[in-house]
Image 1 (spheres, rainbow, N blue to C red):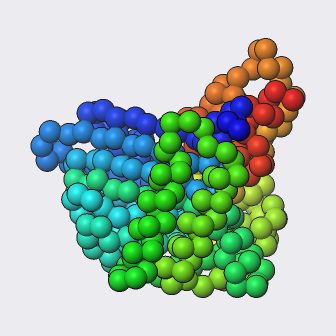
Image 2 (image 1 turned 120 degrees about the vertical axis):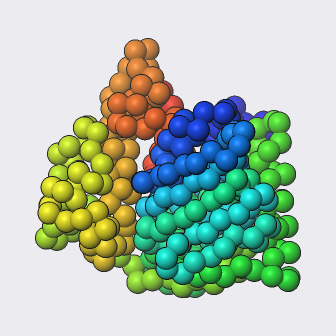
Image 3 (image 1 turned 30 degrees about the vertical axis):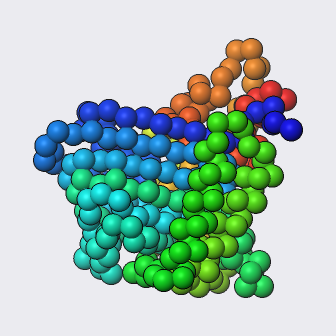
Length: 317
């Protein structure tokens, strides 16, 4: 039976404008201080397809780019098929080799340098992967810490590649796949990841809206100003901390990055608006833009992961 709605989220864009490409990638990966240098004819391409829990992405960026990215809502495996670079510059550096999958560093910001890359990525929604890991380990759900310096070889590499190929065949078919199939594929790929990449489950953190001291004050500031275009820098300034100090305080108390908390607050506000709105006069796209989500596909994916339904379903009720 073919689903009435396609359960997948899809996105594809491409072009030759270096500024547009840099801004798009900075938004996608919560980046800051991005510097680019064109080294020849430039082109970019970004694709995404997936469902709740997991997305397959591909990126092309035929220039030099460097910067810093904050922790996001996803755990990410990447490998390059063209070009190269370094991640976690100045710390536990990893030089990217063609075809060698590695995890993005988890739980903290990190710097990177990329040169003319074609890059494949598998994104796992944070809570989805944490639940899978907790179920396997028989522990409470807590953040995961991966050894991003590890790249699998031999049999473990073969199994990872097979899992990704199976996932790609399942999600890239022309007709809409069933939500059950997407869920099974995401779980199978997640379990393969957990078998392949060394990790540990950290002690569960308080994931509630609270927090004490300056973290609590920062969250109050987020709630009071969520409708404005505030950033992590504004939040840090409001409580007298550097951005790095704010990130470290949030990780210690909540096990989450401040931008993750702010995004969750805005998602909650968007859901409230959609639940009260008239579908004949309101659109999902307009509501997403109102709450600072410029990319409709990523908004829908984050909304689905948080609330278990698409924003269009909330609006239609």
